[in-house]
Image 1: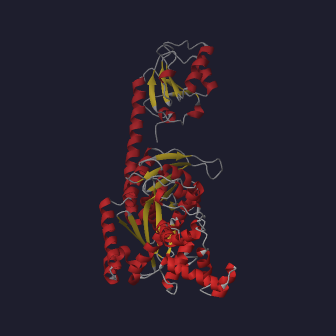
Image 2: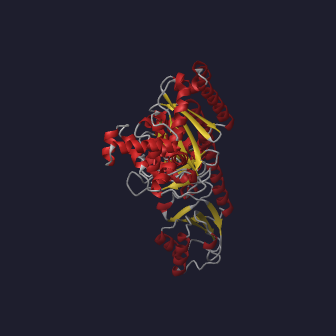
Image 3: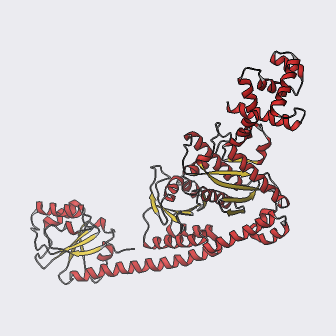
Length: 553
């Protein structure tokens, strides 16, 4: 620890005597400073032992001494050393009384003790304390490195908490708590999620200090540090202590930051290598070679192929090219997904990658993420955290877009299609399913569609497409032009006849006309269109055309 007034008093070579402030000798001394100015306060920083001979002071004036001592105490001076035998044979009573009243320690410096000796003693003690701190810091670094190699991040956090006499927590890229030490710190660390999210908005490296909220269990001092070398932090470290960190503790924290960065931030070359393996595994699965894919996957992705998985295909499209669905999403996204959606910045595919990989890392499951140009392909365990996080994130984006009515612009928007659960042998079919779901998502103005949803509901929303409407308008235009002349209601008659599956009497009753009149109108439809209503394909095309034009009206 740094030198104190008590350690200087007990220094055998200095022969200092305490004349006032005996109960405040345990304060640290930052430096020993000599000044004979009547007002040295402008030159003080706080924490100094001020050494004087009272050359410029009227040390016997009680009022002058009270003002002098009060200003010193207010400036943070921790003690006053008075040399006797120079200007005064003993310390004047006015100065002693003023020091006692203010509670400022007053030390008598004998004639044979030069001020330089006191300055050297303070300097040597400070240097020794710094050396001890550096030595302790190196020892802590060795211990933390050992724990990082043997116990991983959890072992490192436990060693760090012991070194700082407090607690430590590790957060992932989404701000969720990954590990804490000791275990009781988990609830405390969870309260700092908002602070971690704010830290993530700043370029790495970044740090901040979070204070308590005033409750008895939340009065500790917490330092937050971002981890990672990229544009956005990949994780964060929280260190909670009862007081500000000392030099040795600071060394330990900095060592932990470096080690955790190495642990959590994989090198770009390693990431690229893993990505190449993942791409090769995906290509083999899509080529119908599951056994070769399993061999290449090894321990990295092999476990992912032992249970049903889903293929996710995501891409970005311009907002102006997406027709916004009128109805809101039926699923309610989680609060974490809404927070991640609100925090999106930059490439939506990068943001989705971060969400999926973070969820998989928290749950300890494997996930295969392969960028394909402007697309992202994800292979993830069915029912796992990665698939759930992907769906909640996309739906949260859609919910936010629905609330804001999504004005058109040049920004890119995320669209996601998900296959049904399959095994390795059906990977190619799953990829086609995901692409089909993706296509439907674009057509329906959705951000997220699962393949199982394609068979539910009606096929009619799929007709809400400009190309389909153009075909319908072209097919039915001759009939509408005929009806516009007032020579018969062929469109309504065709709709009634098709809706009654060609039953003449029922369709005629719906129209309020004789069945022979309806038969005549259907012959006119065939003549005008040049198509036979006996052909089931023609009837299907006409019915879909009528539905498409009806939805546009």
